[in-house]
Length: 90
Image 1 (cartoon, one colour):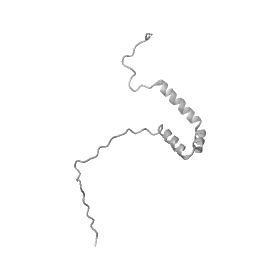
Image 2: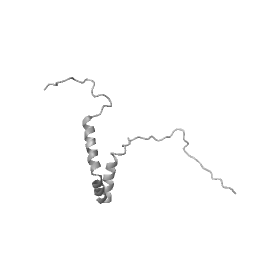
Image 3: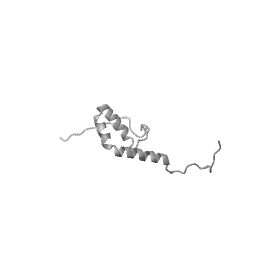
Image 4: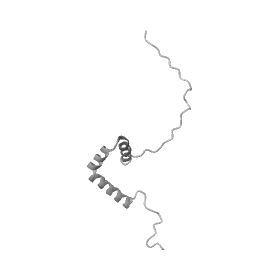
């Protein structure tokens, strides 16, 4: 099978919108917007564990996921032992 048409050797331009993805997102958004009341009623009927599980899953679409960051302990420049003396007013 041969390719017919003009070959794009540079690929899709950076920042261009994927047409299919945007259509799918719009369709899902419309479905949710049209069924908000039913979704809310069904969520309220769930037991606590299931409610929290689904609530957290829905939050992933609203709140951006945070990238994991590795924190290295700071050891340079800090003394190993710190002494604190409490002085009272007499």
